[in-house]
Image (cartoon, rainbow, N blue to C red):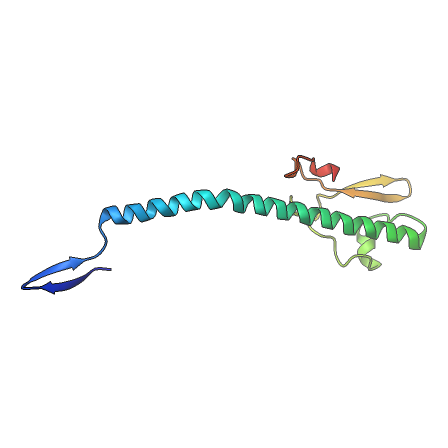
Length: 129
């Protein structure tokens, strides 16, 4: 943002010096390096909370199906067909609908777990939630 001002008979350019611009860039870099890790942690915690909520809802749907039908569901799609859940959610960690691990018995699905590898922010394996 350079403009000229007239002082006496000389014209002078007014604007930011290179040092001022470098200082501003340095301050922006420092702020970004402070904010980025906290934003990343917030995203991981949000995915973990979503995973726990999705597992709760699907486990509840499996239990309700069992209470109504007297048998466990043969697959997750039947829970959608019978309107126990609206849709099969994506695993928020893997971002896939197909990564759910189904715990089967002879009579059908008795539990569901995340297929995500690694641990959540509390140090618990995703598959153990």
